[in-house]
Image (cartoon, rainbow, N blue to C red; front, side, top):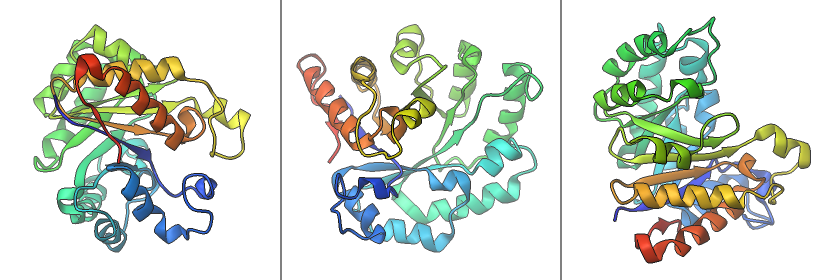
Length: 275
C-alpha cells in the first residue's frame, strides 16, 4: 500500500487561535506549528497573488525536511487570462515555486466553472490547455481541477494522462464526489492521487462567522472520501487537503477523516499520515 498524506488548505487562520493554535501564538509561527501536525499543506494565498521568492524561501526554511507544499497557480493564469498569453506570469510563479526544492509536491491549476460563452465544450477547453501543459516543465508535477461536471469523461482522462497531469478530485457542491468518480472510471492520470474536501462555502458562511468548529455534519461524505482514499492508495500515493468550508473547521474534519480511514484499515492496511 502507498502512503496517504492529509493536510489543510492554508494555515493563516486567526480563528484557529485557542482551538488549534495556542491562543498566544503569533501569526509568524502558524506555518511551523501546522507543519508539526500535518505532513502537507495546500497554499491558498498563491491563488490570489504569485508568492515572492523571499516568502517561499521562508516557507521552505521553517518547515521540516519531509514537509511538502501544493501551490495553487495564480488566478491571473487560470481565471483572468485563462491560460492564454501568460508565459511571463507562469515563469515568474514557477521561479518562486522552485525555491521549495524537494518540498514542492505539485502546482494546482484550479479552474472555475466555465459557461458556454467562455468554452462551449470540453474540446474547446482542451485546445487551450494542450499548449499550456506542453510548455509546463516536466520536473514540476501539476494537478488539474475542473468544475464543469459534464467534462468528466474518458476524453479528459486520456488527455491528462498524456501529460502525466494529476486529476484533482473535489468533494464540493455541484460536482460528482471523489467516491462516485472512483467507482465510475479510472481517475488516475498521474503519479499520485489528489483529493480536495471543499464543501459548500455559502452554506458554511450562513451558519458561522468564524471557522473554528464543525457546523455541518458531513459524516457520510467523510466516510465516502475515506473509501475513495483507501481504494486509490492501493495503486498510488494519495494526498488529501481539507478546506475550512467543507464543514466549518478543517482540523476537526481531518480528525474525522483519519478515524474513518482507521476503520477501513482491516481491509486496506495502514493508511493516513497526518502527523
